Each structure stands twice: as C-alpha cells, then as structure tokens.
Length: 256
View 1 (cartoon, rainbow, N blue to C red):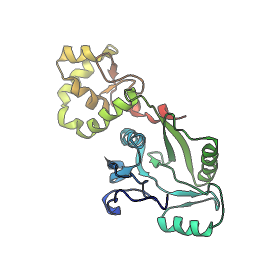
View 2: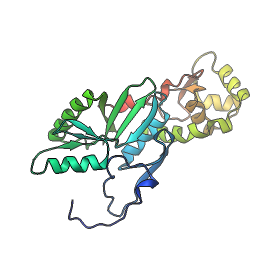
View 3: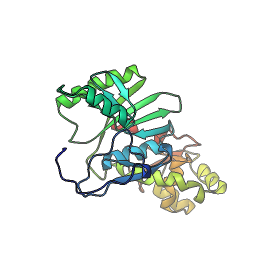
View 4: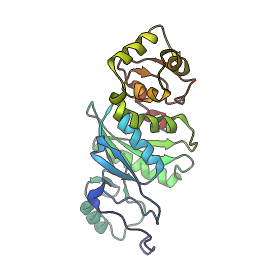
C-alpha cells in the first residue's frame, strides 16, 4: 500500500539477490534470507515456503541455476520485463487501465538439460481465489511463448511433513558431506546394503555410525530413500544409491 507507514528499512540491493522486484514489506519482522550457491550466493525471499523451495532447488541435481523473482510478466503487452526500469516504464504505459496487469514468478530455473522452468510458491490454504488463478493462467500462456514452463507449488502447512523436515537436513548436509565421508566408510555402507533395503536404525547400529551421517550419505548419493514421503529417522528404509541422486528431486511432490 502506497500510504502505509514504513516500519523497517531494507538493506541495499547489493547485499542479496532480490530479483526484478523488491520483496514485500516485512513491517518490522526479520527478512528471510538464505545462501544458495546455485543462485550466486545470498538471496532474500518473502516467506518460509519460498525458502523451503529455494533449498529444494539447491539440492535438486537437475537444476543448474535459479533466480528468485527473476522477471515480471506484463499481462497487457504480453512480454517479459527483466529490470525494474522496464517494470516502471510498463506501469507508466498502462496508467489508467484496470485489472490484473502483471505477474512475477517466485523462482525461475535453468535445468542441466537446458530447459527453463518457473515456479509460483503458495502455502497450503493460501492458494489464491479464482481471479488469482485466472491471472496465473494468463501469465503461464505468455511465459510459454518465451520458453518457460510455469508450475504452482503448494508447501504443506504441517511443519512436521517429511518434505519440510528432510529438506532442512539435506541442504546443509550436501555442502559438508565430503568433510565426514571417507572411501572406506562408503565401501562399508555399500557392502552392508548389497543384499537389499535396510532400516536406518539397523545400519547405524551394525556398522556403528552416527545417525547424523545419514543426511550427508543421502545428499551425495551413497544412500537413497523416499525422502519426499518419509522422515529421516530410525524407521527410514535405505538402499545403496551408487551415485544416483534421483531421490533428491523433490519439487514434483509439491506441484498442484
């Protein structure tokens, strides 16, 4: 709202990547920031749901790089606006027009196969009304002409959902996994799992490793498990991954 009082001052643009638009006012609350190597460092997002998706993109082996709020879709001129200057000029050109005139996706990605995706992130229970969905539909059609596929992701409200818990374990584990894992340990685990799936509690007890090593083992493809639907805990069924990272492809579990 233009006339709303300001309760906080955002840091300068160079401190974190905020994309084509400034993230919404936080009204005195702390901004949500995170580090994402695939997004060239520190980024700011508007919600815990967006931070979760950013972490999923970090660990997804199919994602080469991603950006938060990468561009704005001008629904009137049917084009993509990549800078704040372009957005400002487009708004001046649309002065006097009514209705939804622009849309900004929460993330865009470039996949390792060269495909480009964009994501709209919503918290469960706040998916938007039919007018909002109509706007998303219009934006989707325009983005497709520019080579982007737009997907809506709905983050579960349950804070104990496996996707929420596991992603927060796997993202930091991926960055430091090689600090803890040795070739000898990897070989021992692969031999233990050679005959088939095992429970996490049994693996840890029998080869005497800490449960804290399970996330790094999953993050670099020594072990695999259905981490989209089952929490990383003693009852988790594990198998040898032999370098396969497909279990880290979690985004599809959020698609609505």
